Image (tube, rainbow, N blue to C red; front, side):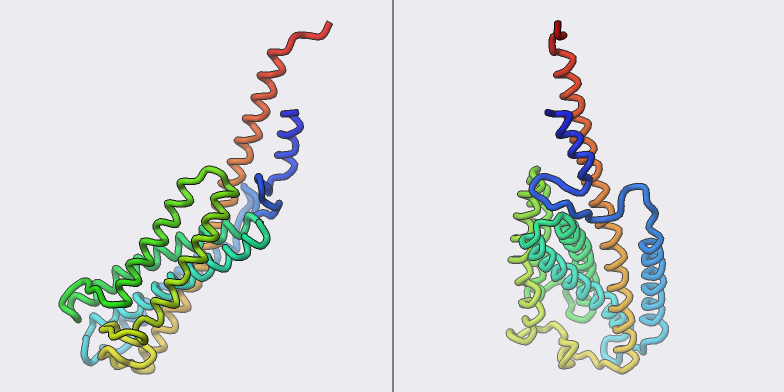
Length: 269
């Protein structure tokens, strides 16, 4: 019986208990030319966006050179929101299909989105100190952002606390769907409540945006989005390798248990 189970596990490398046999990445050992090409292209794009921020965009009249942090800050926040949105969509898809690739996409997007949101908060604090006089103030958008960071850190802690793959994926999917409510809440906070946070669309906040600044911002957002896609692709492949290791370990344990049971059986006369 154990031998047949091990054989079935080897015959179905893309399936774990409670999941459809849908691979979440390319098999281990295969090259990923497209993935590395995306990473290289994203790195060049980010370097180009940084060069535009320092050498192409004009010096802001009111804030001076500290305003140049704005391009990386907005791009990082955008990728953070994008990652949380993709994780929400992947969570919905997982609950509907129970395919492992959606869970892999969700965890990849949460991790990368969280890293970018931390970067957005850090760059925002560097900008706030010379402009507001403090690194942090509990105004509506910043308060919601702090809550958002805690929620997504808790999401990773939730996943780490559950050993059962199906239970972990299902609970995390529901969690990311609920936590995504902080994204539109953060976006509309500066329109619903009185806030000192600058509004890029209306120009509130004392920042004079020129066409060259908007072009630099557009390139920065596009470069960061490309970097997000490249990193998510690599993280999904890493998750596929992790599941493959788990599958092989489980098959080896079942085979060892079968051999131990077989060696202990009395010989037939």
